[in-house]
Length: 267
Image (cartoon, rainbow, N blue to C red):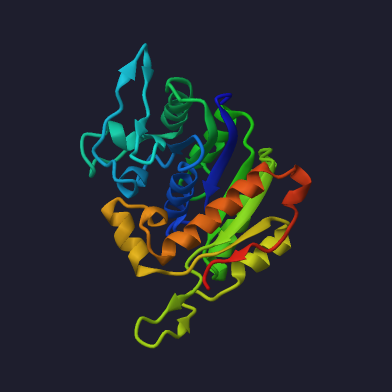
């Protein structure tokens, strides 16, 4: 996709780790100063429009091309959700149809000239992930989202290996749901453990970009269509730091993507 200077695949080995939340907030944060597009390639669970407050929007056409939905933050979004009859309609497709849809999302959409294209992928390393790599042809980086416990890390390692085997230039890790602060006493509770993402990054030679805590407000804001990074509360600072770290990682020379420690967002 020649219209984008950089491309970032946001992946996870398994579901339920907050991958779409991470993708949406990175894209929304960077869209405040850059030209950013978000391709929702999670065809069976296209949740990005809801989290961005554009659920129910439709894509129009101009000169034979589909036009992305533009959010109030000037983020250009393409999702299968914009073409479904309602929010409960399932997408019951086999592999060839998925490949065709992703091809159309890239070739038949009038994307603007972008600084960054963020691709939100479904969990795993199946049809959608492989199709995105084949259609884009040259992906700059993969950001793998994981929670700290070993059962999530097992699958996250597979996502790292997938990215490297298909020629993605850089890989990075972010540890989500790292710690919960008790609302009553303030004590930190490690529901899923802590530090597993950083340890894994060192093992596999990926860049570690930091930890994100469990914050009940993040859930409420996502359901309300307001990305936490734009909400103006303390959580916004943490998400903004992650977005800045992702952009620095993307734009740094390739040799700078060696293993390292990112910011501690849970403080």
